[in-house]
Image 1 (cartoon, rainbow, N blue to C red):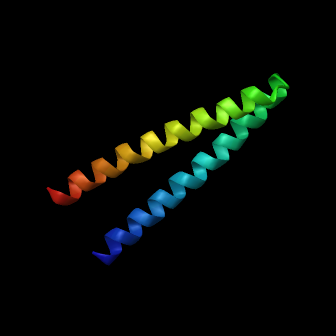
Image 2 (image 1 turned 90 degrees about the vertical axis):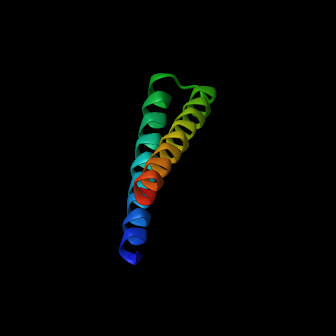
Image 3 (image 1 turned 120 degrees about the horizontal axis):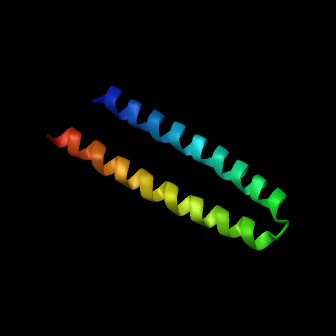
Amino acid sequence: MKNARLNRVLFVTFAASVDIFFTFLSVYIADLLVSGIRLSILAMILLSVLFFWMESALDSKFLRKKTS
C-alpha cells in the first residue's frame, strides 16, 4: 500500500514537472514567434487546463485499476 502511494506521488510529480517544462518552453517559443503578452498568457492558460484535464483522467484510470 505504501509503495503504491509512493509510486503514484512520484508519477504525478514527474508528470507535473514535465508539464511545467513544456509549458514554459512552448510559451517561450510563442513569445519568440509573436512578441505579444496576450498570446503567452493564453498559451499558459490553455496548457495548464490541458494538463489538469490529463491528470484527472490519469487519476480516474489509476483509481479504477486500484479498485478492481
